[in-house]
Length: 156
Image 1 (cartoon, one colour):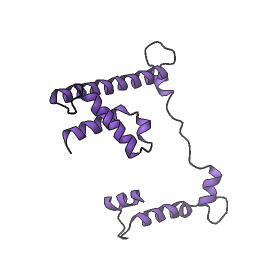
Image 2 (tube, rainbow, N blue to C red):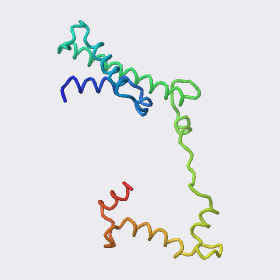
Image 3 (cartoon, helix red, strand yellow):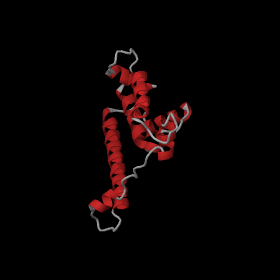
Image 4 (spheres, rainbow, N blue to C red):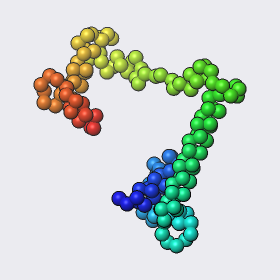
């Protein structure tokens, strides 16, 4: 990959908001963006980018990226600073902590684990699904889950 291609890709990545990067883009639209960056960097409009133009464009891209980071951090800080005193207290910071929730209710857990339907979960009933999970990951059934088996299980 040439330096121009690397700079063009970096410029495109830096110029597009993070949320927009997750959306599909057609080849034509992508090339319009790349061509627009080239045209913006080719300040003397001779159809080529000189080293000086690349340096200048790189500086602009870095400054634009830095300005965006500062804007985003400032926005986040202002959201956290609920009393708008320019300082974050521990309470303000912790107030945005996500709620911790269970993935299933007690009734759901009882229904899943209480295999003999006696309204209680025995040690064996609690253990059996976990042993099944272990056995599923232990692909070679040697009684040891290796790093490779963990990685393979994570890819499923």
